[in-house]
View (cartoon, one colour):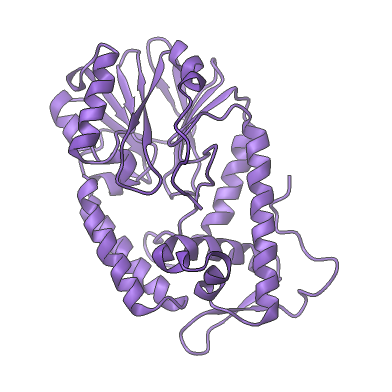
Length: 352
């Protein structure tokens, strides 16, 4: 799960990116994860990747950071958004109005950027029903919905000028960025690869000190929910295959050994799934009960986050035929599958 950073970022670690004309600005957020990294690409067009949340302190910090580089918000010509979360896009409309910059983001993120309030309300309604179905008390679900509604002030909506698709290229004067779709942490996670410099602007796809949580998200158009952890693990494997010297993340320090970090994350998910399987084999449990076994009272204060963690791993276990769902009373419980006690158990598909 994501957690607040305990150590300040290492400015020297960003020096190779700065030498390549990509400058990190650390922008404050009101969220537990702490500051968010946005990136100024000194090129033509002058580009900002992500914006920070919609707050006066974040805007002030952004203006100071741009000023230290000899620029202002009015100078920006292109804003690229890595994904739909409000700590990454909240200032986008302010920046667009002050600069006239084009806004570019993925096809999946576009509805969230252009219809932020409507999409956020639909997400909240989906989350409340998902929490109820998986054993979270109704009063807790309603309280979390109220918190989510209060957080909406840090988001914003604006027009998307350019829709970015997987595999296309953003041509600048001195570099080319290849667009790569990496869903999982959110449905719209997109990374940007400067192959000539072996740099990846990664958003929240891969973070050095905290494990990006694949949040359960509302399926667009209805139907069954996406297995977000399954999707995220596949995205990690695709990134693992890339030739990279440095990953510039949305939070914290750069990643210089992306393959080693990805291997560690895959192993972490394997261990967590195994721990959950042991709990389920003791007796059937709801996802909320499983979350409480792992994280105690955090399963109440961070109910949706911990629920997403558990459901991601039970998806892995169900896909491997090791657990099953039971829903006799409208609340899902996970039980051991008949074959789960075999010594030669099916793989979860997280090994490297």
